[in-house]
Image 1 (cartoon, rainbow, N blue to C red):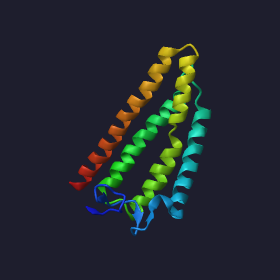
Image 2: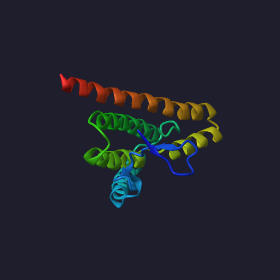
Image 3: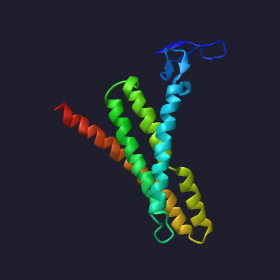
Length: 161
């Protein structure tokens, strides 16, 4: 569905933005939404830091960061599929998405640490390890996301029967 666009829209129409509150304020600017993401992100970041300190590297490979990113990808796949299957992104579903998806999973996963660790492996004499670590994390994370989506979809189908 589209509505007439502003004068600067060369095509004359823009899609309706689903991330607005009553068509006025974008959801991401709402103080309540910011607070949800802040709380979720704080908890997610603390959980990541605790795990990364508790799990030492194996053979120079930062397995904690690998595991954190893969588990986070799986969690996000399950969460977003489960929420999407339950209806539009409003009310409680939006609250859960912001708190757990954007906040917790956003703070828990860390692709910046993945990049740094990959760079350290590449420049520290383990080029093959760096390549395998970097590409492997992304590939396994993508598979974990698909697995999470599949699991949430399968559970919904089983519940519907």
